[in-house]
Length: 266
Ligand SMILES: [Zn+2]
Image (cartoon, rainbow, N blue to C red; front, side, top):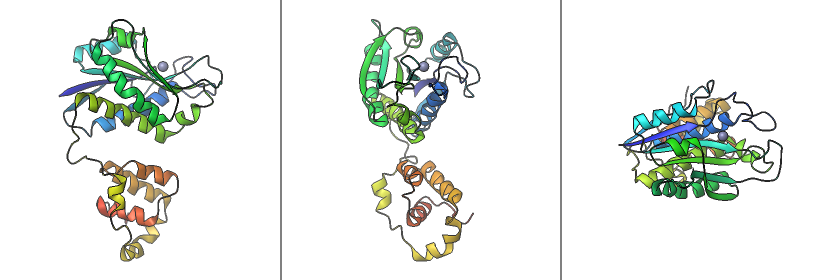
């Protein structure tokens, strides 16, 4: 069993931790954490402990967070953050992953080296690399610990990615997949996500099915329900992106419904 402690940095009302337009860092961090936890749950033999307040209302003190992770004997800790330079919009930007200066274990550095490029790719932002810094979460925790900064909240370049929920989701999944690589986790058999190619290879156009369901599929909300249910059942998350981009055809929706046995006539 691999025990992963995850924390979304700060609380929703923590002073200063926001974009120049007032969006909260915790909200970005929380979206990444939820996606990370959901993806980790697709792997076998993983336990997750959340270190921050899931409602965001309380900014759980850092000592409480590290006490919790240490007492639980986590195998790894990831503190999820988004960066700020001076709180004013600027053209700086990029992703960095922090390990504790001087005392970081090899395991911490290895985790950071695996996860940093994955976050860079997920967000499509500049690679600022793995950095050694002094901060509580990586200093006081007893297990391999990293602190991720998935882009700058006050960057006119990065903010587009931060405002893109699909990218934050992919960032969370990237962290989970990096941890899975480090710990050599195996996907659960039932939860193994199908690749989009695999889905596309199915016969997604069935005229009979289309006739029966075209009325219900006209509802955008209903299409969303079907796609969300399919992704939950293991369909690739890019289907949700296709829905968001309006590039999903009725045949796609029906195909997903058939493959993942989701009722379409709700
Ligand atoms: Zn932060």
